[in-house]
Every structure is written in structure tokens, then in C-alpha cells.
Image 1 (cartoon, rainbow, N blue to C red):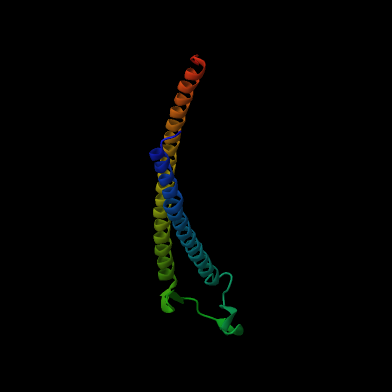
Image 2 (cartoon, rainbow, N blue to C red):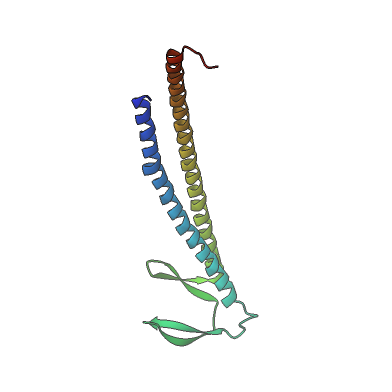
Length: 165
């Protein structure tokens, strides 16, 4: 027979791991995925700016198609690529020079990388906490098993009058 208090403690630890820590880890990983996606989008945007403003590739500007709504496209010719309109968020646009646009993207990329690093650290701490709790559960279970084996040995001695070595 095992100790009901120890079994209850083990159950509480397992419940805490599954209901709280693993859920926290899942949320952190979802946020990390979103931040990594945003970072890769910004890097792609930076690359796109480099391509469309390259005077060697497009000495006279370039032609493109613009979605004017409901997947209706209109052809557009861009002659001057010295300034860009960039969406800052919430459909707010600001005109940037190429240098300003690159600085803005660099700052945003750096900020997202720092957030990603912080979330990776947080995920590592949660994983370490889970591991420590699992080690504690293992120790409690070993303690229960040792108590059970001692009881069995005492029970065997009383039945057979023989000590096991």
C-alpha cells in the first residue's frame, strides 16, 4: 500500500505540469511562430525593396499590376523609386526614402529578433521547470516503490521466516 498523501502530491504535480506548464509552453511557442513569421516577412520586404529599386535591373522604372479591389488588377508603371509608401500598421502609410525605409526595416527586424530571443528564453525556462517537476515526481515514485518493497520484504519474512538479501 502506498502513501495516499504522496500519491496525491504526485497527482497535483502531474496536473500542474499538464494543465499549466504545457499550456504556457504552447502559448509561448505560438507567439514565437508569429514573431518569426513577421520577421521573415520584414526580411522579404527588405529584399523586395532592394530588387525594385535596383537601377541596373530597372533603369527606367518597372511595370506592375495593382489589385484595385475584388481581385481586379490595373497595370501601373513606376518611374521613380526614390521614395516608397510603407504601411506602418493599421493601414497607416508613410513616405520613406530608400535609406529611411531600410533603417526602419532594420529597426523592426532587430526588435522582432529581440522579442524572439526573449520568448525562446521563456520557453527554455518553462521546459526546465517541467523537467525539474518530472524529476521530483520520479523521486517521489522511487520513494513509494522503496517503501512498497520494504513492506513486501517484511511481509515475506513473517510468512516464511526467511530474510531476502
